[in-house]
Length: 309
Image (cartoon, rainbow, N blue to C red; front, side, top):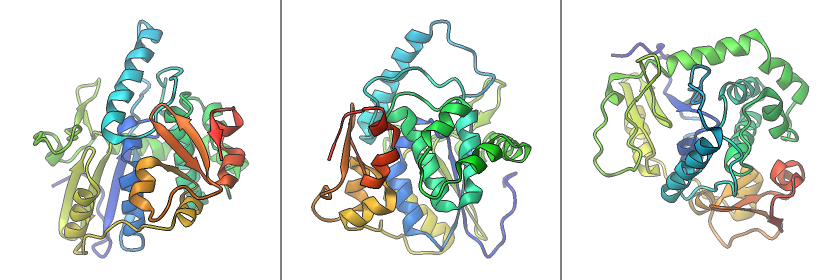
């Protein structure tokens, strides 16, 4: 079986292995947002922060060349995912720890706040081009998130309790179930999600990976997949019908999510786009659409990134 912690037999748990600074996880946001909404109240969703950029990673001998290479890597991924990407990437992230600590520290403030905090951290890389790879940058990126107690967040992100939780995530992500150790590439995805080797010779989950745990057992869905593939896996494992994404009217969707990419608005909305008061932020990979209230505090607008109502 698996070394993962046991779950109450009456509970269906979906575990999302992710990282705030991961380009494949960013590209999967439309589908994962849709799944979280479609299965809300019927499954328990838990995020595990894998730490893609770790402390023991060897520094690049040529930081500028590494940044150029990684920007092309993100561009290649965006060709598949259609996700926004920054006009210019300032650098490759030095560490995922600060963003992961801030994202984990936001969870006790409620699901809505935690979602918006994580979203802002992702956008630091893929919209702004400046990864939130220090504590100061991570806290700055989330300033103005509605309902967020920033002082509490800063204190919690610096606490031993949150550090222990992220360390536990780091360890859990490095105990992949057997099914993901060897994943055959059947051509259905450019990122099929076989477990990745770690510098110490171990393995970790590829990002993103979903693990669906129920009384029937555990099922892994690794890599970048379609909405229907994920929904079918969750539904069959949980004994639930595969549920179509919840599509909202454009204005309601933008109020609900605060920030929408083109793939997200195509999957999660219905009707004429954009809403009259939507704020557009242009990126090298297409626009990001912001709710006007979100635009007032969003760093992409505050720093003068291209934006137009």
